[in-house]
Image 1 (cartoon, rainbow, N blue to C red):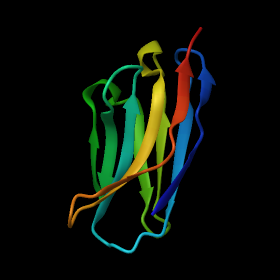
Image 2 (cartoon, one colour):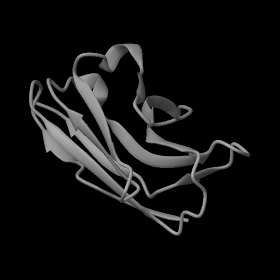
Image 3 (cartoon, rainbow, N blue to C red):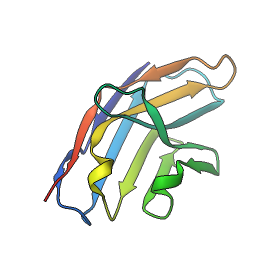
Length: 115
């Protein structure tokens, strides 16, 4: 399984970015896809995930971030609006096989929110 993420960058507070991630080599059907982020020196934290029609958001991003999944393409996007300084982090997309809970990760993409 390979995941290719794109869309990070530099944006001012209040701005928007869209992260995209495309997965290939997936041979399992029951899965969830989503995004983690990691601050320097910290553990990765779950930002959002989607499985079927069910989505989960970390509390601080609710109402600002929207995750969408293209099931046919095994792709996931994260629309990030009203970005805050504290959203600055490296964002990683992932896919989890729900049958055995194994996770696969893409390369990180840097999101920097700065004035």
